[in-house]
Length: 531
Ligand SMILES: Nc1nc2c(ncn2[C@@H]2O[C@H](COP(=O)(O)OP(=O)(O)OP(=O)(O)O)[C@@H](O)[C@H]2O)c(=O)[nH]1
Ligand SMILES: [Mg+2]
Image (cartoon, rainbow, N blue to C red):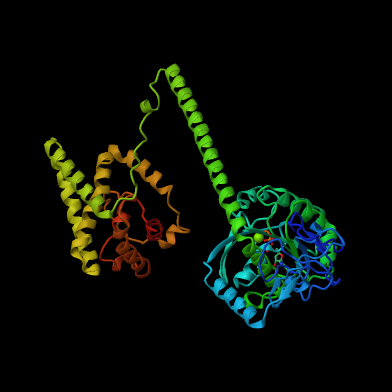
C-alpha cells in the first residue's frame, strides 16, 4: 500500500488535484478530508495534520502535486479540520496569525453564510455486487429495520434530509443481469456509495472488476466515492486494509481521479439514530466533499443529465420508428394474404358470436314460460283435437292448483306459488308434445322408453319392495312428470314422501305427483329422484 506520497510544494505552485492517494490510518500522516476553509484543492500535506474527522482510509487530493522537499503552501493547522486561528500572508510570504477577535468574527460570518445557504438537492447512487448489503444499509440510513430484505430487482429509492441537503439515494440491484441499468443513473449522481461484502473473499475479484467498471465510466470518473466494507460483524470478514488490497483501491481511485474514503461497517448493527457510526461518518464525508465542490459538480451534472435525456429521447424515437415500421410491414403482409385468400381483410371476418348468459333470473323464466304456455294453448284450441288436450290441461291445472294450495298453506306466499304453478305447467307442456295420456295404449311403448331414459339418471333404491307402499289398488296412471320440474315444488313432496314412508300409504292424503309417472312407484325411489 502506498504511504504518504505528498510533499511540500514549491512557492507559487498551483496545488491542483489530479489524483487521490491512500494513507494507512495507523501512520500519523493522514490527510484531512477537507479544510475548514472549504477551498477545493487546498489540502495540506506533512506529518502532523492534527485529528482527522473521519476514520478509515482516505484518498486525498493534493499530495503528490507537491514535489518532496518543497515548502508547504499552507500551514499544518489549515488542513487539520479543527478550528484554528486565521492567518494572513506577510511581506516575506509567510503567514501571520490574525488577532483573535478578527478570527472569531470571520468564523461567525462563516456560520451565517452556511446558515443562509440554500437547500441543495443531491443524488447518490449505491452500487455493489448482489448480497453486499446495499438495501440493508439504505434501510438503516432511512431508519428502517435493515434485516429481512429481499434482493432488489431494479432499484429502490431513499430520500433523507441531512443538514442543508435533500439527499436521494438510488439503491440499485446488484445482480449480474441488472448491473446494466446502473449507467442510467450515473449522469445525475453527485457521488457513489460502493458497498462491498467483506465476508465474501471469493467474490473480491468480481467486486474489483465491477468497481473498476463503475469508476471507468466517463460520467463517474472524478466524482467522490465512499466504499463501505460491510458485514464486519461476520466472522472472518476482511479488514479495511485487506479490502483495499484485494480491490487495488489505491490504484483504481488514482487512475480515475476519484476522491475516496473507505469505512468498515455493519449494516445490521442498528438503524436510524443507532446506525453504525462508520456508515454515518462515511455519508457525512461524502456530502462534505460534494458540498465543497458543489458548483463544479452541479454544472457537470446538469450538462450530463441534459445529454443523457437527449440521448434517451433519441433512442425512444428510434424505437418508436422501428415499431411503426414493423407494424406497417405486418399490416401490409396481412393485406396481401387477405387479397390472396379472396377476402378483403380483417373487416370480412365473422363477427364474434354473441354469448348469451345461461343463468337467467327466475322471474323472466316464469314469464317466458307463461307466454309459451299461452301460445300453445291458443294453438291447441285451434286444432280439432284441441278439446281433449284442453280437457287434459284443465285437469292438470286443477291438480296443480290443489298441489299449490297445499304448498301455499306451508309457505303462506300465494303470489310466489302462483309463479311456481306456472313454472310447473311448463314440463307438462313438454310432456304434451311427446306423450299423450297413458290411457292411449299405442303410445305406451314410447312412454315406457322415455321413462327408462329418465330412470337412467336416477339412483335406484336399495330395496324397492320394502319401501314401496303396499296399496291394495294401484293408483290411476297420472300423466308423467318430467325432470324439468322446478325444485321448489319438490320440497313439499319430499316431506310428504317421508311421512308416507313412515306412516304408510293409507295415511297420506295427498298423492305425490312424481309417483304418478311410474308404473310401480316406490317412495324411496321418488325421494332419491327428488334430490
Ligand atoms: N451479517 C450481516 N448480514 C448483512 C449485513 N448487511 C446485509 N446483510 C444481509 O445480507 C443479505 C443481503 O442484503 P441486501 O441488503 O439485500 O443486499 P443487496 O446488496 O441489496 O443485494 P441486491 O439487492 O441483490 O443487490 C441480507 O440477508 C441481509 O440481511 C451485515 O452487515 N451483516
Ligand atoms: Mg438490494
